[in-house]
Length: 296
Image 1: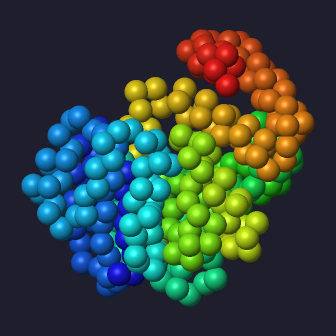
Image 2 (image 1 turned 135 degrees about the vertical axis):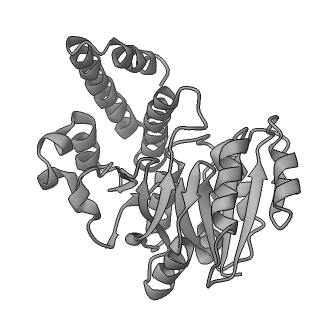
């Protein structure tokens, strides 16, 4: 096989059904297979897949192993040239998988992602720079938003559209849609299971680059990513997970003091956000950030 599409599922039956339909209702030029890892779902996902998509390689973990543990379970079974980590809350557009494979075949990138759009067709940022001090400061402080493309090219989470106007090398790409060359996991191993969810994609890209691999992004392949549909509190879960993941990455790669400095920086800017959103009358957002401070 050229590509194994690896989809992790945890109680997202309807989303999973839609995602699989978007793959199997199209013809692909490359040899593509689909593997589902089910993280102990109780919503009938297994029965649906086995009935409607018998061609899928269905793996049942029996428990919720998190994003990292579930994907690792699948990656250990992949024999294809490439693996594509794909969220269940995605829809595959015509030609997108072929274009992703072609992008990898024609370049020297070892990990990559592509253009993502939400359910309404709006562009969805999904890459950025590795979490050195300047990119982290630009992101936490909001300087990347205030100063536009002057600073956004150095931001940990690149949100300026100019960053995505061409194929390019990046620091990291989101694990929601991440294609990986097989030699990467054969060399550096799998996702770090110390991170349950959020930040594991950044850590993996950082670890890969430390071993000489390259991370890229292409505008040619396009995929719809609904985002946050598998979480009852998507913003709280996401923001808390991002901060926790970053703190773990800093401690792992830069040491305790760097991790402590980052924690202080996070507390500072999260506190400023609490005050700012209160002043704007957005109490729900302020309460979410306050809750995060006591949970990281």
